[in-house]
Length: 172
Image (cartoon, rainbow, N blue to C red; front, top):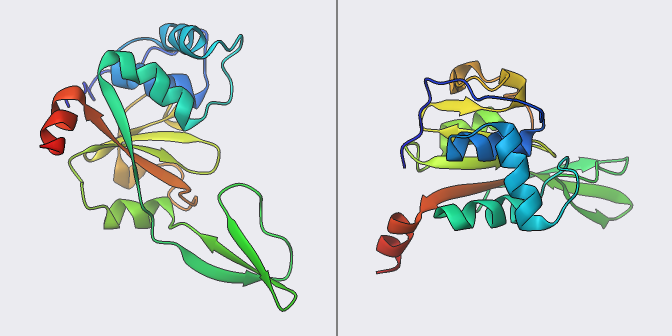
């Protein structure tokens, strides 16, 4: 998959992270990406997006998402853990929360470093392509991952992005 990481993404009329990720993958503006999302999902306003919404918008354009496993670490808290990005269990009156790695830890440990990944860092989407990343905090500009603005945020989920041809080749 080839993405033009030299060009800043046009953020006209929609400044949310979901449409920005779609715009970066399809080479369009965020306004066009939000329109595509509304057509595919039936939503009137594009604000919060799930991975299903992103997958449904990308599928007609020959792009597919494949969920990847994360290594989770356990921590014990006396207070209830945050609702997002946590897999909690109560034992002996204490809450054990399994959390994903930080964004920086995931970047160092990823197996497919030359692939394109969609990363959920706690209700926020980040697109990582090779050694560069883009999201709304970078204002639509591609940055090297070592300069990522939120390297300490916890990664909840990761999806690898495939084209139709790569997906068919993998099934053989």
